[in-house]
Length: 60
Length: 491
Image 1 (cartoon, rainbow over the protein chains, first blue to last red):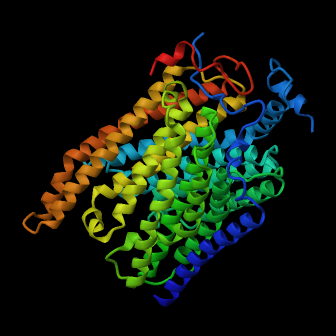
Image 2: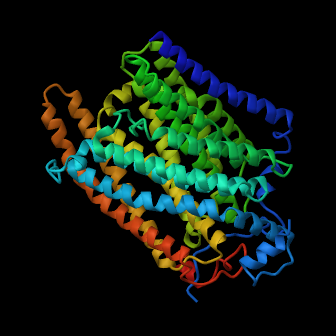
Image 3: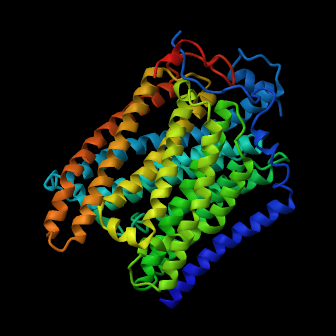
């Protein structure tokens, strides 16, 4: 049980640890700044905010 | 690169005046081969998996049904069903969606598509060999890891290709903000190969001893759901809901909080499946605490999606993608809160070992994940083949059949499971009677399987018609038409 527990706890620490490292990178890279503009990055001039991009096919 | 050349061959009718539209069309076109390959195999496995699921459901009420052949007995077709729908349907659909989203969010055309095509071939080969192995009697009897040892390395190789590809794409992305969906995709793409390899090493090649096997099993199974299916499903929702509505996500701050709290704490959740089992109490307690902390990411996602949709629920009438995606988002909130409740030890003793758990699993993998994938397929495929879905009526039939099916299934198993659990608790009720309580609900579950299978046949037909390009050419690279014309009235 001890070896198994160690492996599992090791696995948990690895997963959580890699997330923490990624989080630190995100902070350093400035990914968490300017959160007001960030959600607009999936829009562009051609598909701007305010224009829906999906619908049922028409029957015409 | 010459965006215009690919675009014009894709759709000559397009006006070449928008750089953004050129770029997007080129990126979409670059994903066509691998994404359609993954979607196509997903549709095939969905049909195969629903047939086996339907058969195993009816064996619960008619134990003698088709039991003369060993490969059709319950002990083989039930794990075959689980593994086909998980690794065949859900993974393939999720990978296809993930590849497309990754290319769009990196804002570069998909690179190394041959690597992905070989990944798709290996993946399907692995699932096929594995499922045939289960039907031949080689199941490993470890929940979510039943595929025999000679199939799993093939799956691992396939997925490792995809993991490597994700790193390359991320490395070559256009500079700028990393959108929340992309964080979810990176988590799913990078953690899964590691998770899968560890679980297989510790359970198949160098098995740990005794009850530690249970701990590894549930650490893997919980993370498969929480660090693969959840991120892919949410990545899709965080892209589709704002993109279809043309409305940025309500609170980007909440979406970031939701992602990082999921990423850092989810991997502690697995042990809540082993409440009452022979494990150190601290492991179970830590896991129960982490499970209750999941309230933070779940509520963050729920508030965000609801507030983005608020005032725009009429969109469910005109957008097939949103109809499926919003159903999936609601199911996500319900199934996650249900899961948190099931991790509370006193409630767990009631639901454990009953049909309630089966209902919960289906609400998660079907109500949430599969519905998200249907929504994504409805959005992505027209952009890859440059063709409109051939029939709005068939899309509506697909939606109502599967929505009815999954609600009937999850509802009947949940209520049947509660009755079963209460009966198991009561010392005056015999074990046989506790099973009798569940029978009518198992009939309902069997009936729900017909709804789901019928819905999947409609969906598969639509998909094949789309690949064969039956129907009309689309009018533009991004939009079908204004959402307020004649079709918007019909639900």
